[in-house]
Image 1 (cartoon, rainbow, N blue to C red):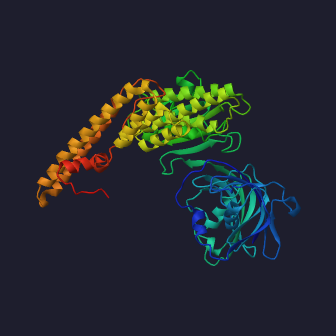
Image 2 (cartoon, helix red, strand yellow):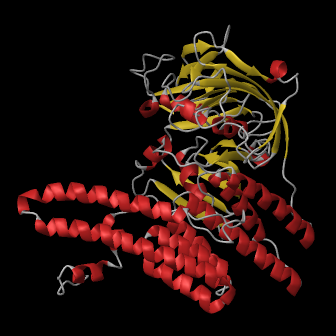
Image 3 (cartoon, one colour):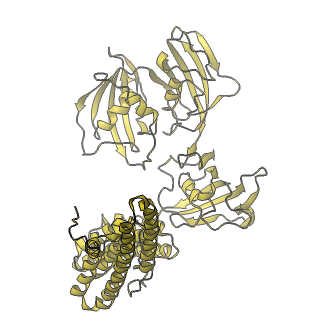
Length: 582
């Protein structure tokens, strides 16, 4: 089979998944079974990858040159290119492997012996979304043998209904339907190796090839949002636009009607905006923790006008959110949600520098509010959003450049503060380093990094930062001195606890070592707890600002990590002068 392609791409968010059916098919490729010939080079530097939308023309020929199917008008097609999302839509193996190697505008021929499943389009479908696991599908289906004998017909009464990915139709037929759009009509040729027993066709013995005539009547989008079957979004009514391009994937102002129900026998309704909110919809900004996490995750995947039923576990519903009085703790809930519309954030393209900085300030202030509310992940996302946008901002004057640099440094330090609150000291240090790379004498960055080093147990690095503060700016000396004093106390406490345990270790007989290890572990937990207490108790004029919140320690780390670099002095105190750290 030869495939001619003309590919273009655009970015779509990707989602990490376990080994897919496509991955399993790739493993069956043997040397010489798949070859590509470049017919016309493309442009650009990047190739499409999983999660990217690709738009391409395709002509399928047999090896002797007979055209089987084509999107190009000169070969009998309609001249409309195919739209697929790599890793999401089912594709024949030649396309699956060939397209990721191509550049935009490239034309190539891929020769592949994977003729197990082949599709010929009779009538083009609508849109570009195709069914995939665990979508619910309705289709008219008939089947004939290669010599034309009718063996199956679901063309009258009700369309055949099946759930994608549940082995309810033969494997090859499902692969073919997975490439179809709504209302599309096609013939899917399936050879023996892709004919598997199913409720649609229980008996497959004796058939070398079956031709399925399929009309995809309708499919219902069912999304396993978390990938573990706990948070499920089921589309009840189609919305307007194309999924996911017309969904509110980015932070937006959304308007929804919803009805919340407990997943009990009575499906008890605990809230309905049309009843309990005087008929007014709920209006909220995504990305600000204003609704339960599972609710927001699913609304982001909806189209305007769409109605969806969401079933949600308690940890993504109200166990971590303000719980309505009539929702018991640990309750699984369902929401019937209608997305009325949404407003995207203002596009910065074409704005002057001052307008851009005004927009950045609004987002930063929102981030500060989220930080004060303890929503550190959401606050960090706000700061990082502005930093990403800043990659495309080019100040034109020295004054604008200074304002821009100061604002960017402030945002990086806010990100560092979020990481520290989340217990990720190393990432906090990295964020501070971005400021110090641009401004090596930035006193607040030194202070923040010193606090992160101290929380992580890197006492010597912390001391260096606090001492550097004094050298750079005498006005920072009171805060640096206070930090050094706290650092000294923390070091002494670590040494005292560890010294006690080392003495116990060397006083014990060999058979009692295991008991000492248990005591030692308890003592280390006590040291780590003391470190966190000391760090949270810091006070500085910079800590009072929402842009420079108080530091906290990382989660407890190993005792040996807390012990160094003071371990050398400790061994000396124990009389082990010959010990060397390797």
